[in-house]
Length: 150
Image (cartoon, rainbow, N blue to C red; front, top):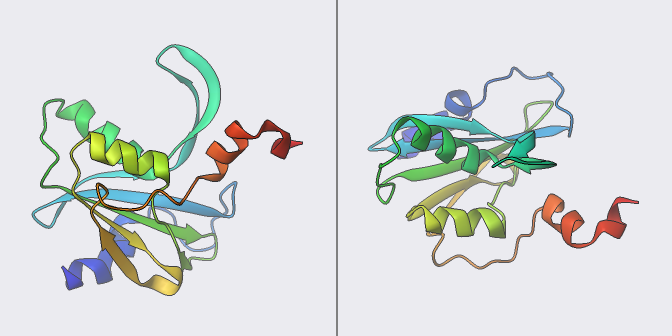
């Protein structure tokens, strides 16, 4: 696992240092099974979902799950590990703990282990079923409090 953690930035990140993203950073995610990367995901904006048109952000860990299940719809994810990393435009690694809504989705899909990056490149691991729900995404905060957008 330690060798895998050391190599995660190279495995998950698909843009070179210095490439600008619209937010100044980007989240990347990977779903691993028995040490093998099964699927990647990134955070991105979407305009439509399930026939309802609205602009919202898909988080990297959910994007990776959707992509994997699209190719393998009946897959049991209980023995898979989800990894999330946040990288700034200059290539620095930052804190990327999944938000409350993503944790709930991970639990719903049966994920029992999630690993996320810390400031400066460290890692933490947790069971989403047991993790506190104390990290609200900025998008969800804006949805709940529309006045913040003005």
